[in-house]
Structure formats: structure tokens, C-alpha cells
Length: 264
Image (cartoon, rainbow, N blue to C red; front, side, top):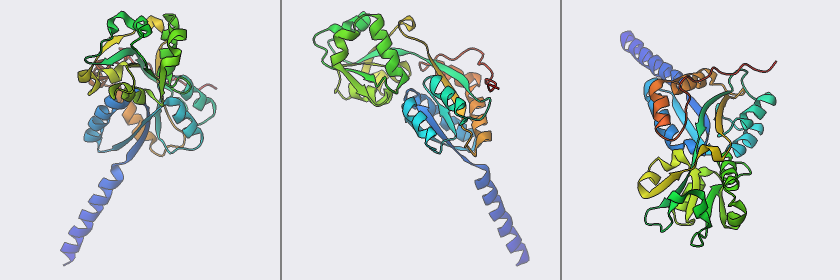
């Protein structure tokens, strides 16, 4: 009887240990990372046993939420400015701000569209185009990049009344995919992911047309999972993971820089 109880206790202790070892990482991620991070987090969970809870949205909205105490452990922004502001406000674990990728934008239209997207942004002046979807430039870096590219090609003033603003770049993609917009200026990382890749055609906009979309990450000071967050960042730097990100529209440095030292 004692032996049976001992075995039960050992089994229970083993189960509790396993539960304690497998923790949940709460990730706030820019919407352009939706497809890429779903794949990467699944690989991370399989290897480590740690669950990754992904929340996608606009970087500006996440910035506001984190300022107001949103319970995230790590924040992957579509630009550097929002994480840098959080760092300046003392809300970031010192030394964790670093760039993880550079985004790119592309025109995307559904298959069968009469619009010749190979003419680039100037095709947006075509009278047949009634609605052009972009992310809201007020709080989405990809929206700001879209506006900059339109201004570069001197078509912004002509098409501005036809712009339809998505809350984030993922919603902007949904507008075009669903037919609520005729064409969109979207993140290349979403354009290359299913279902957009199979349902449409795209034209990559030259990177010289808009400021670099340098994307940065920070671990939040309020996080109780800092070690796991660090593991996730290290996982992202693996050669096979960086190659996967590159193949899905994100420019990742050949040798990623070390995390930035905090400003004294």
C-alpha cells in the first residue's frame, strides 16, 4: 500500500513538474507577422513545450495597450519607434531592444483583375480602381510606408480619396481579398502567405520608394517570463528560422546584431 502511494505521489509530482516547466509566452506581434509567426511559434512549442499565445495587431495600438498595462511578455513591432518610446518610458527590460527584420511592401490584386499591376503604383490612377486598401498610417508603420511610396510616385493626391484604411495591415489585406477593395498596398510577408499567394498577383514596390520598415522587438519589464522570451528571441536567430523568414518576405540580416545596450 505504501509503495502504491509512493508511486502515485511520484507520478503527481512529475505531472506538476511538467506543468511548471511548460509556461505560456504572451506575444504582441505586428500584423505582418501573422503567417510567419504562426509557423515559428509552432516549431518553438514543439521543441520547448512552451506555449506561445500570439496576438496580432497594429504596432501603434499595441504601444498604447502596453502603456496601459496590457499583460504581454514580448512586443514585436513593425517599426523601431514604438519600442524605443517604451524603452524611454522605462517599460522595457534593459538591453533587450533589437532589430529582428526589415519589412517590404507590394501591390496585390485578386486573380482575374483587369488592372495591370506590373505598371507599379502609377496604375492606381486607373479610373477602374475605385478603392485602394492600405493600413491606417496613424498607427500602422506599413500604412506610413504605403503613403510614402504613393507620394514618391506623385500619385497620392490623385488617389487619396479612394484609400480604404484597415485597422492594421492584415485587415487591409482582408479588404482586397474579400472584394471590398480593388487593390491593396500590403506587406510582402502577407502577400507571399496563403491564401493571398494562391488567390492573387503581386508587384513588389521598390524599397527606394519608402523609408526602411525596420522592425524591432523588446521584452517588457513587467513580464514574468523573461527567460522564455529570451529563448524565443534566440530561436528566431537560428539559421533555418531566419531563412524561413527571408523566404516569406522579411529581410533578415545575415548576422543579426546584438541586443542594444540600454541608454545610461
